[in-house]
Length: 124
Image (cartoon, rainbow, N blue to C red; front, side, top):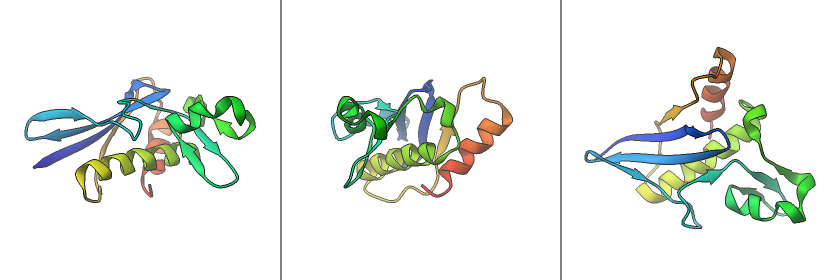
């Protein structure tokens, strides 16, 4: 039985972990590349939106269309894109839709940053 899905921004503001609590065991999920950490990179090409490792890997070839260091962009569309990718990874692992999650943020976030993070996850 799955109790909690925790999308953690607490690990590092530039990278995130996706954690699932299953039958009293905490599991860290991996992305398609097998990595446990999702870098905060979003890139736009002519054909698609790349997120995480794939966006980071193409940065040198496409710097103008790659966003990283999104700490400064908390609560904007970039955060929603990253949260959406994390939700996608969790749903792939679980085999079902994720409708509830616990999103943690760093202790030094102010009220506006906390609210922006909540708002960005509403429709992902």
